[in-house]
Length: 270
Image 1 (spheres, rainbow, N blue to C red):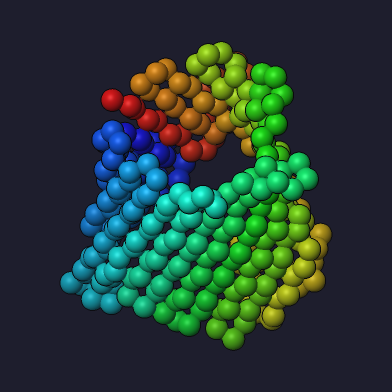
Image 2 (cartoon, rainbow, N blue to C red):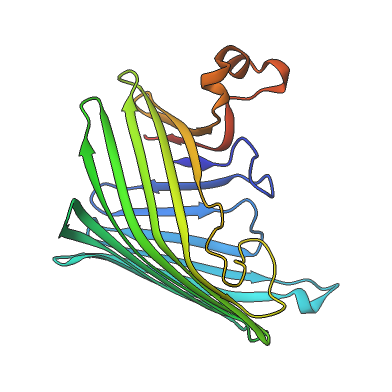
C-alpha cells in the first residue's frame, strides 16, 4: 500500500493512494485525490507483462457541458530488446498517446537508454508533441550510487493559429544516493538543460514557453531527498537545503520551518 502527497504540497492538496496484492501475479487499485471523475483504476501484472485500465465518467446536472466520459489503457512488457510501455487516453474529444522504451546501451560511458514519445490532440484543435532520448549509467562510488544521464528533448505545440517548438541539447543530470545508516538514505541531484533552439510565433506565452531565438534560459535545478526503510514501512520525502545550513531549526520546525519541502510518499508492505 502506498500514499503520495500526504504533506499537502500538491496544487490541490490531494492525497493519492494505491494498493497491490498477490505473489507471482499481482492486482492493484489506485485513487487520485484530485480526480473526482475516474470511476476505477485497475492494474494487473505477472512480472513480465502489465496492464492498467481506468474508466472516467461524471455528470453535472446543473451544467451538462461539464459532463466527461472516457477511458485510459496502459500496457507494458519485457522483451529481449528492452522494456516497452504504450498507452492511450480518450476523454470526450481529447486523446493522448504515449510510448516509452528502456533497454541496454553500450555507448561511451553509458550502459542504458530510454526513449519517450507523447502526443496530445485536444478538442479545440490544439496539439502537443514531445520526444526525448536519454542515456544513463550508474557509477559505484564506494558508499554511494552515482547516476549520470545525458539526453536530448524536442517538443512542438500548436495553439490555435500560433505555435512554438523547442529543442534541449544537452539535458544532463547527476544524482547521488548515499546510505547514512542501514535504514536511512540521502539523495541529491543537479540537472541542467540547454536550450539549443527555439522557434516561437507571435502570441504564444505562458509558463514553460521559450522565447523565440533564446538559448540563454536559466534551466539549472537541484534537489535533495531523504529515504527511510524500516522493513515493512518506508518513507520518502523531498527536503530543502536548509537542513544542511540550519538543521536544528529545520528538524524542530522553529521559525515556521519544515523538514519536507515537497512530496512525501509513505508505503507499507504486508
